[in-house]
Length: 203
Image 1 (cartoon, rainbow, N blue to C red):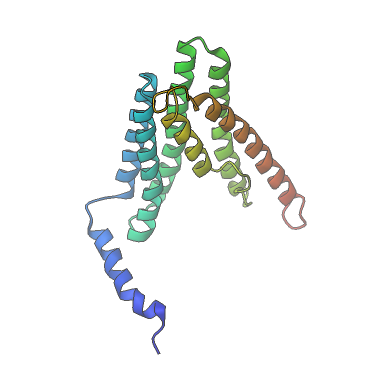
Image 2 (cartoon, rainbow, N blue to C red):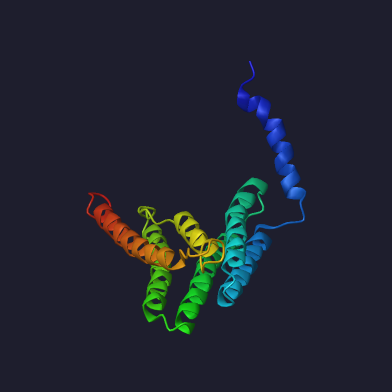
């Protein structure tokens, strides 16, 4: 008797072959994501927040697709995985740096400092996971994953600068939330690693 897996496998094979035949590579998708985020950063600097939000969302979608395309097409490489992770960190930092510059341009030192803090701890959230996994431990604990941070920043940009809705500017609030979430998640991951190392057979 055939199973659902048996009946689906030919279609899945055809789809995978179609992906392999596409003139695309996961690295090309990763670089497209980087370009999208650079455009978003330039638009933030020019204070076109809605367009910046759209560019940031599209760039972030590319960041999501490159890994999935790599797995489904079988075109992934070890360097591609390294490039993907590196560009993810770079992209988030570029956009947050542009936000710091805009606040600084308007002499809003408090929000500029909070945006810088958000940038630092977004990197630390990623670093703590990578360092934990380098020690053979689970480093995925915490609520402030990249997906969550992307959603918060996307909302802050699209609804920032009173552009979309007059009198509504969520960019400062989103930056404060990102900074707080980054600090909390970094501490969560540090605690999680500590707990694992205190478990018999781990430390």
